[in-house]
Length: 126
Image (cartoon, rainbow, N blue to C red; front, side, top):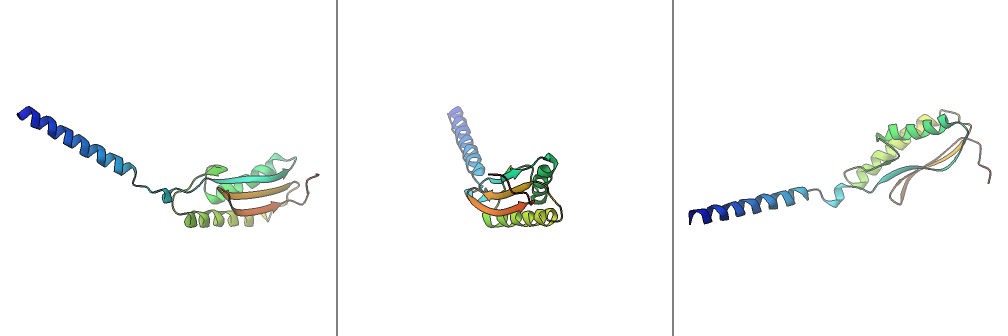
């Protein structure tokens, strides 16, 4: 009889641990993770790769992310505000520079357009 109680206790403890692990892993709600953000060039007509890289790097650095595609945690409103502030900082810096090429840049969260900027004066040939 004693062995049966021990095995029942072990099953109960195992069930409790598994239940805690399951609900603990689900503690973040879907509202904590936003859609993917992207920094893309709609148009990029250039001969100097350094110009292109300078614009791209300015946005990545100012937003504080590791690349052109990134995800942020928190509410959409908070994350959008962070991204928009970073875009404004990058744009303020880049507006002080002169570009030989023509660049149209767009920052999006999913299908939502957050920022659009144009740099350079040379319009692409169509």
